[in-house]
Image (cartoon, rainbow, N blue to C red):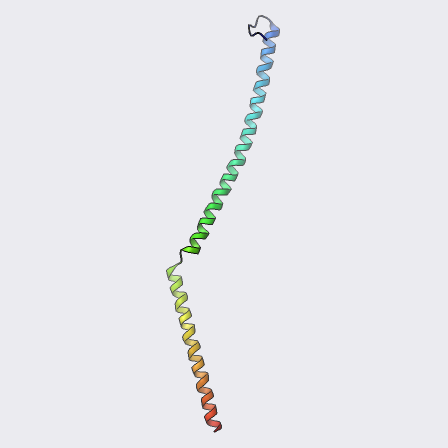
Length: 101
């Protein structure tokens, strides 16, 4: 093809080449569109995973002071009740031993 378009054959060959190139460009554009969609889905997934991991790590490292104070108070109360229960049990045993003497 010389490009001077002196005959119908040259024009038809050029038109065929242009049509073929257009088809190839459209096919490539479609492939790019599909690949872009895959990349965007992976990017969204990664962003969501990062947010979940950030939240999880924050929950592990940033203690709720009110909750921890309540847990500490509950533990202290359990210890006090346990000590009182042991004291009462010991007193009851001492009373039974005194009755048996």
